[in-house]
Image 1 (cartoon, rainbow, N blue to C red):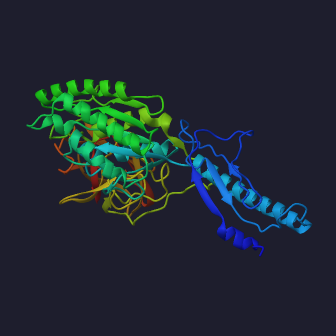
Image 2: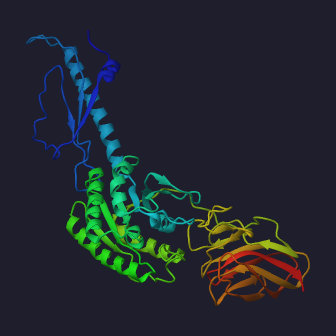
Image 3: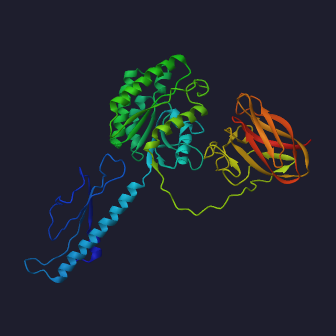
Length: 471
């Protein structure tokens, strides 16, 4: 009995295999008979270029009952053969096009791998800064890993930064971690600090072998993985730092030994130019915020050529954004720093990072955080940034303005600009901590009615609020 087309589709079997090369037009496609014709389509992947795509040959099997014996084939039987062959070729073409488009548009899978320096602090260490740079650079990336610790909305938080781990512990656990996420295209490896800064020191020869194990394990998951291994950041302790210098030489030797054209191992120097005072936190081991920003910049400079780019999308021409109040800010009274206007980057504020590094309250580029005993504040202020506020002034006149701010640096200031030209700059004293706030006062003339103010920091301050009182 002849099968209907839907029955043929249901019994069609798809078999995927790997070929050493693509079939050429002259190649035989295997045995073909009248009961089981076979068709083959070769597909080449766009990433990575060094190997043939896994789905390099697809075979479709279907069966058509035909009369047996010479001279007994009817015109209808011939039409069946032609129609089913056309049907199978159309199916192959559709699937082939889908696979090609999927491969071409795939994001680069980036695996941050290491210890607590990779995990980062409450601001996500280098990972948030690096992710922000990749987004700003129009890179199509997917941070991967079995760990997912907190961060602002929209931040890709996956990683394999395991606090306290040594090189050998990472090498031992890595096979299990790799089973929990997709295969990495790019690996950022910063490991070795715990081996060299604890009382029980790991010898360089042992660390060298374990680094090699990590590289070999990563290649079992993706034979064409690109590994970027760091010469690790310094330590404040002089003896530990000498050991780090020696180990960083070992890192270069391992990279030279294992690097291949198909799976390169690239050294990224995190040590040179890293200030052992300003770029390290109080413990003398982990980077400070400035140190993490420096790490992110070095990672991005190294891996940028290996990252995919986002495809351009057609969007309607945007209308010009306008600022509007986020909250009612009445003067006399207090204007909370986080109550800047709505309107976005370049209209209501300018911030040098694309996301809220503090992760609190609002989900735009302004960095808002919380401080115990103080509440919500605008933090991580950098030179060139500004905030705009719409305020309602009850009466024109001179007002005493009190800034509640903090800074662990000397020589910083905040400028307040009022519509109409009035301006005042107040110096912020060194409070020895971002979390210790003081009140700093000055005066400014304001017009009556609805007007706008702008806050312009010199950088390195946190700002809680500004209080206005009649002078």
